[in-house]
Length: 72
Image 1 (tube, rainbow, N blue to C red):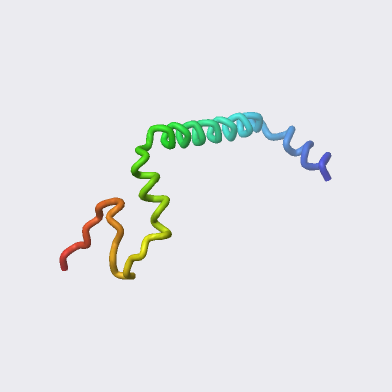
Image 2 (tube, rainbow, N blue to C red):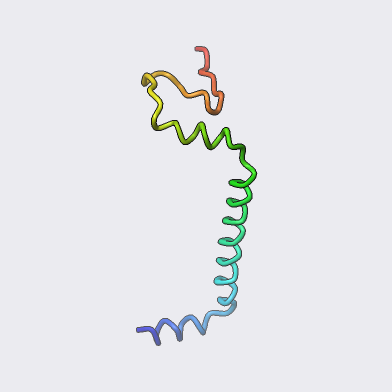
């Protein structure tokens, strides 16, 4: 089975770019994620970490993102 798949992969032109592209996307994504985590404000992480523990009424919105309900 592996020989069958390998022989078909060898017959496809330009297939060697896919693993390189995948590694590049993986590296860029996690590099950006690490940069964001390092540069984010500690107040943001503190407020987000307490969200599941806050007692709020179901209709009350958290002001973490400062979204105001629209007036209808």
